[in-house]
Image (cartoon, rainbow, N blue to C red; front, top):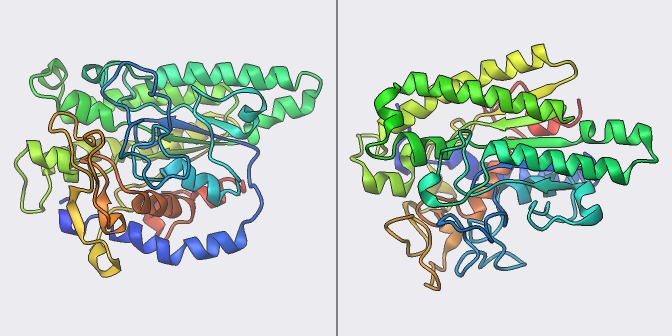
Length: 362
């Protein structure tokens, strides 16, 4: 059974107090040459700004707590890629593909796009988005640019991207903006288990494509408790858990297939190091003891259609007491905590077989 909404994310928040101080004290130097992020709105930092889409966030009050203000991040401040970059010793956030220029790409690129899914059709009702397949094509463009910059450094060119870290956090839109959209053909034709298998087969192909582009250290995030987010709760009857259990149960079918996928890819692909970040493990227990008081409502006033912040409306002032910034996306404090647990696992169940800190040492 899924944890109740009132129990959501305690262990995430706990990591702020347990892991972050020791991380910041121990790791002052950059631990990998570059970072590459693939994903959806949880990781998007501006790739959707110029697209014709409902899935964009380059307007107030988004970014109210971010030093650069309106960037296209779906949060009040930092998102998971920003925090991971800090934990890994990077002085600045990784730029979005839409804005990455020149030698900036040597530190890495963020390809994530709000509304994107593993399947190309996921999120189509939102408008334009950059699917996982398209993100991989964009990465191949980046790799060619890096190779051109290093054309006189053959050894460095051949090893450079293989020493970088790749973070893939995608799949939510395949459920909430595909399979569970009312009256869709996908749900009529496929059971939750067969749909999860469809996703895994496609995802496996995509991760192999990433490997063939030079990636060797790859962290794969599972899909979170979608049945516990306010937008889903607003549109579906809840169970005794306080969440929409049938959605959480369907998502778990996919997550259960990711761990063996990681094992299979490591076995099949020479030199590959994959790890699975278990967001379900990082999303449980009671957050109230650590100051999180609002677990089932958004900090900003939201659109009923999209669940995103209404432009130019004032958000709550006590943002560190909220799990959710809008009706879909976490606040900065939760993003930092998720990144902390992914980087330096608190429980053995947080990451398999290793957390990101150990992955980059391999």
